[in-house]
Length: 304
Image (cartoon, rainbow, N blue to C red; front, side, top):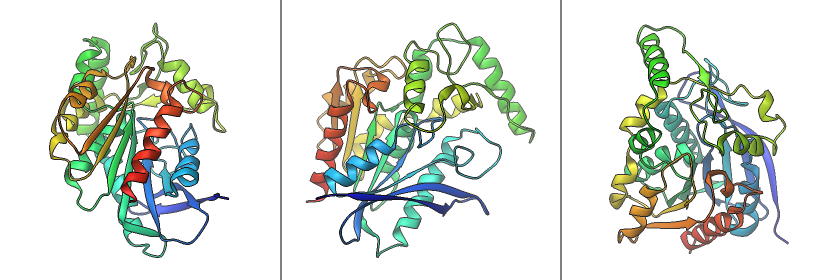
């Protein structure tokens, strides 16, 4: 009968003396294994719902997985805490990829698949364009065009003000300014759609720390990084197969980009559109079963 083990590893990051905290899901049986390298989205830690995916990848697809917290978050090292940077988070993915390629007894370097959730889809789809030697890339509830996402949220002078203050402080070498990352619709926060607060609450309920006790902070300058991150518009030149599982009722990320990609004829990019909301693709949501099935099917195809 199929099974798996889970252990915690420390993997060096690009930053000297700063390690990434990584869950290693290992299928039973002999290696080396194909492997999924997975990071959550925005400020979310691996303890908030990612274990469900590592288990299923091991049990149903016979893939190992390395699910990590970004620098400055969760159990990973680094200061300042709660600091979000697309470029830093990309480096964290690259750190894990580099480490995997140094472990030939554990992993098949020709079978490395990246997985991104929501905001981290910007990172993994960009790596699908740039990184040689990947077997595939998956993303669910994907942010594929940061510019469209910011524009769809509408003009928010308060957010723009604090993002500008934060950016200026960064240029001066000062500590970041933080705002609430997730709030209710009447609260000032980077994410305050109707589904945001209940969605984060449900994800964190799967781990040890309830959302009410999580830091729930973000540096608003990250919206300027979003504005120039538009990898979804270039996926026609992806170097590897890509799976996008999009939520048609997403109220955080405009689903139209994934829908436009779905209408394009590109044999490398598969788009699965589900009749659910942004957070419903996580375990316990109405889209989870279809989401994980699409991922398992994709991984199995890559392994043949």
